[in-house]
Image (cartoon, rainbow, N blue to C red; front, side, top):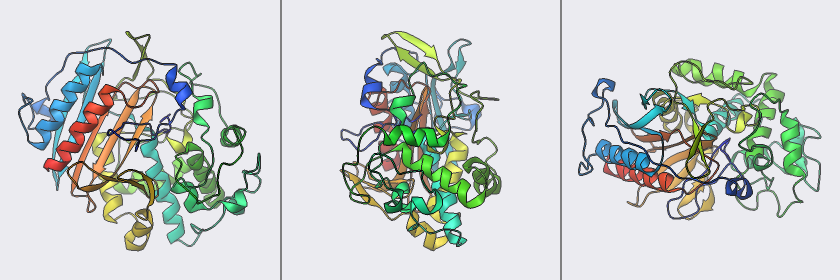
Length: 400
């Protein structure tokens, strides 16, 4: 879920720039707490941060200290990556598997939640480049009758407005993604859209203002299917995963399990109880946040995306055309533009689904990158762990 995300939930920078995939009501049902023991980075992974102290102010040292603080805040495990040019350093703290006491592995797979949205937006932009659709096309042109209930009108909402979250459509996710959700339950995309529209009538005009909604990307996935005859996951596999060699990245369509080397996901409940939630319903997330990836694959994808190698200059400019979202935050097409405390502007996003929270920052040319992830998320944004690891990630980027 990202809960917003898909899956994209939120970490706050002392402001409200991060959107959650779940509703406040759903998040309020869960409580956060817990503690853990920090583990230094493993030099065998190729990191220069093994044995780093909190006084180490190198980018990797800053991120390592943040990972350790995240575990002290209650995360089972935290992983991270700092990359400048072709040089990457990795950090880890805590455990990726509590039952078997396995250290968190920066090379492990995890659910990326709303970071899926950038992949979906990329496919649609490539289709625009192939003259198969336009960003100014309406939802109704491709999905007749999909958005017609409760005062909403798909003939007045464009593809661009789906991708930059200015459609005005409500978010469905908080209504269908409780902690106890059946991971095997089937969810049709139109059912998710209908759930969103039934919540309330429009509160503004399409294009009027930013409002993060996972419903936008469920519809975006439906548009991909209408244009190509294939689902979003198949198109992402062919257009992005295979060309970039993202061997540890997948878009599960229905299978709720993870395979190979992965972080186990947890949700903290009742202040002290950690429930394993690795097996998770991906159909309820779909194009809004169902994907699985790794630090390395995400860094490769986002570098290729923001640098223009996936889209070319004209479409990359469309990707980076933003609308105001919050203080020091703008939203493009599946990506955010953020002003860090040091004054630097970066591209980024986060992803929050049950059991996992991740975030990335990339410079405009893709040469500087910081990513981090943890394996605990219980549908609440703005936790101490999120704040502390986010602060470390921003400081690490500023130190690059």
